Length: 260
Image (cartoon, rainbow, N blue to C red):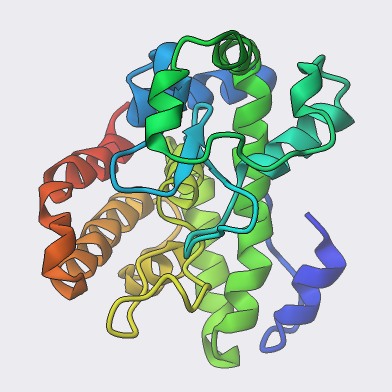
């Protein structure tokens, strides 16, 4: 976390008190496996995936988004950032992944035709062997999200948002909840991730939380607010997208934040 940046955006507070996220190797692996379970049922095969109706591949434990060249979409692309992390850590990667290329499949049909090709099997092997690194990448995304959230919020709300974030991060399952939700539904700061002007990311979940004192059930408040944000998203969505079909699964997912 760049503490100077964080303090700069906390314009309404007299000091910078954000605690940050810290994960041991064991915790990173545990949380990574939980996120992998949520996204792909801990299936190695589904570490390389392409959802019907989407114009991007979904890769890794977090189904990180990978767009084709010249065809970005409304959601934040996250897989190239993971490739940067692999390169920085000296992870051995197939030659075709060097240099952070765009997604090589032109559409889902081509992806399906190459589902068990040497290229996709290489990618599965890489992703199955780097669960802990991917989890730390997800944690870094959460840390990077907070300054953006605070910068986009009114100055009068920044201290409360930081306090809610830190309370969730300080209790059992809280780090997992934050990591999973940002990976799952984003930061909530992008104007392209809105229906009827309302978002559903981490910013909106923190805004919707009922304030709780330290030591109280902050993760329960987070889970409840996440459920409300997702329900509102579906209500605001284009009926042609039929997002209601996903809501039961989304609700079950945010309930896992309360599990021991």
